[in-house]
Amino acid sequence: MCGIAGQISADPNKIAANYPAYCRMQKSLARRGPDQRGIYLHGHAALIHARLAVVDLENGCQPMVLDQGGEKYILVYNGELYNTPELHAQLAALGHRFVSHSDTEVLLHAFAQWGPECLEKLNGIFAFAVWQQRAQKLFLARDRIGVKPLFYALRGDSLIFASELKTLLCHPEIPPQVDAHGLADVLLLGPGRTPGCGVFRNVQELKPGCCAEYTVPQVGAPRLTVRRYWQLTDHEHPDDFTHTAAKVRDLVMDAVTRQLVSDVPVATFLSGGLDSSLISAIADSYFTARGKTLQTFSVGYQDNKKYFHATHFQPSPDAPYIRTMNQFLNAQHTWVTLDSEALAAALLEAVDARDLPGMADVDSSLLLFCREIRKTATVALSGECADEIFGGYPWYRDKTVRERYGFPWAQSTAYRVSFFKPEVFGGIDPAAYIDEGYHATLEQTSIRPGLDPLEQRMRQMFALNFNWFMQTLLDRKDRMSMYSGLEVRVPFCDYRIAEYLYSVPWEYKDYEGHEKGLLRQAMQGVLPTEVLWRKKSPYPKTWNPAYLNAVSAMLRSAMQDPDAPLLRIAKRAALEQLLTAAETATPWYGQLMTTPQTIAWFVQLNYWLQKYRVELV
Image 1: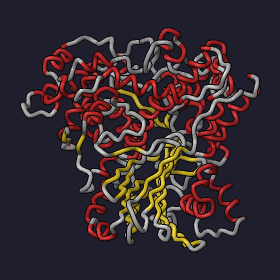
Image 2: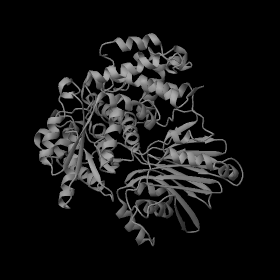
Image 3: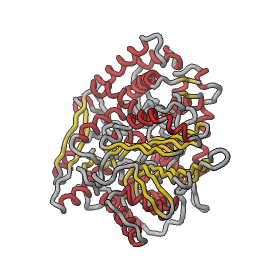
Image 4: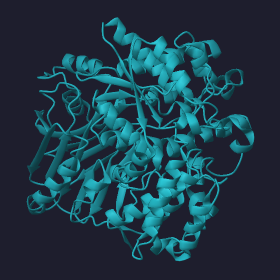
């Protein structure tokens, strides 16, 4: 993976004058791309790249340039294509000649051959920009699922884009200003975000499955056009259960196998849960057949065995299941154990990585975990998104929760509002703000005519999770891993799996009343029975009271500063009450962010306001 950025301006003098800013932008991407750097500067365009070398280490440098058919194409690209061999063969048959085996070169030739329609041929995770020098036109695109990020801002006669918010903020034309709508997104939805919202004023995120063209005309103002090139569409499901399970098995096996291709060491996350165990087992067979040994990694917390207690959401510890998988696989396993002090301290680095307050220790633990994996591997595979696609979360299966109005993981609007001063929202009605995003998603959900109420609701649940909750987890995965230059691939985000599963009847997905029952039945024989049918358990968190003590001390320390930016927007009395409260029955976000994580989120919020010098406008 890599980091990309750039500016297209109608005024070429502006491009030349901003070279120092481009250097700062490139430096801000160094963690995403520690191996190589490049800047293309010509006329109306500046394209910036920082590379993490994964495939064809010698010949994949960027920006990459191609002269073909009377046009000059310049590409900066962050991502990985998993159908590179097929595309290479198609393009070679059409007369294209290659000097490397990098997917970057294949992508560049694909765009030169097919233009924007090349997107329909790509299987991968990506965000890229192509400048057509003679046509004076920039093309931007983001992968179908939204695994790789891409933000942009229109400023006067310019379009400025980047992989991360921090990179945009290095540009002098993008001050760290946040208006009422941006702040409402952080305070009411955080760590989630409204699709397309970049939080900072005038900053937007190119939505998943979308592309854009920005043209610098001979006369008049530059023009930006954005269009959606992919979306989930409901249709009659053609297969019975047996054929559906067989199709799911083929898709999952193929997705994982394709994503093991790399010229650098590859590892897998292994939590002992269904999703990561399936990926590890498939990868292990692939490696063993080639005489290689897979590296697997799991994360845990100091003294968790001592303090763990079963809950409805987290019914059992992971360690016994990880040990079962260790015995089952031929892999070399590494246990990473985090202590409470390090976990709390890393909350601040997690904000630096995400550029926003995040999921508290759910973020910081992943950041520390990825840092340890990076010492051994450059690429890792993880099980994100299976729960959204196969219906694994409690809110899919609990009828009461499923039919409750609003986002099922965010029923805390009134609780959130109680912490903040009324004027903070600038006249925005918090409940109406949340309702607007919820209703917009329902209205855009594809539901074919004739479905019964349950199937209609399950399409809505799929869309809500796919467009909102899953994006929060993908943000987290990308920023926390790339902060240490670790490329994390997510096989369950293969768009073919999402397309196929969208219209699969709920009775198939909920086979025999098991969460992700279809996936479990489809993958029979791949895992030990006790792991294959293990009840879902979420990403592990610490149960050690030392963590609560640590984050409470951090928040108290912040509140002792009379100039703490947090106190400009939050009520001191409400924060004091939080610090002395017992475990709350109102999670801040999802099932993992309860009292310790809510306290930690306020620590992150204060740090973000301070570190990013946020101007509330």
